Image (tube, rainbow, N blue to C red; front, side, top):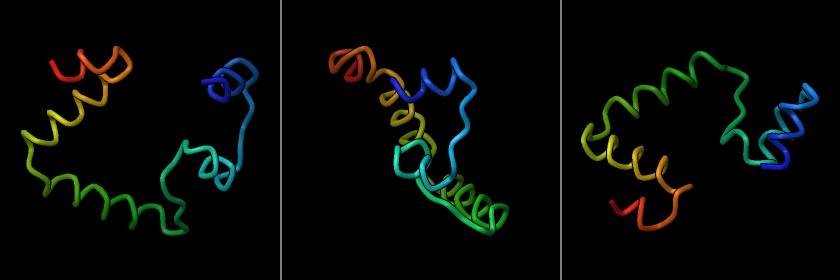
Length: 70
């Protein structure tokens, strides 16, 4: 949260490597479009209901365990 505030308040830009180190991104690729399309295909092939429920659960995690379970 503190790093996000720093970037939002100051307009600070970070390198891809630093963003990876901080956990702001999960991967770095020189072939961005190819990599993005491959990830999008994996997401599209996933079970839609399970994916939707997982996304909702992650979004609710900030409100605590009980909210996530609901």
